Length: 128
Image (cartoon, rainbow, N blue to C red; front, side, top):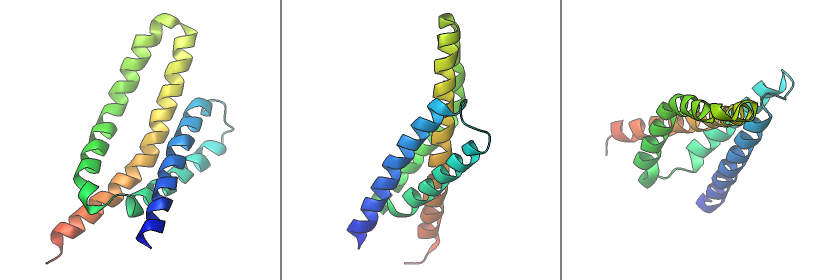
């Protein structure tokens, strides 16, 4: 059964990245009610990834990567937008897409990191 749940986790991860990319590019063009639904789907996919896709051996690496990602997103978006400012409106459009993607990716990774962190705390707290 572990193999089957691992496949679901892999599919959830791939769908989450693809959906985050789509949301990032289309976020400024989506109808008002669509974005919250898409972010909710990303949240659910993140929970699935956190529950079934991260093994005990991968917990530390995943949490370190997630912390680095979550802490660097706002700086990345600001620097990216500033760097592309010389391209005018085209640069602003690209920066908006990247900011949309990173925001959607955070909506996907945050719940996974939260679930994995809870599992890690539980494993540390349980008696052996």
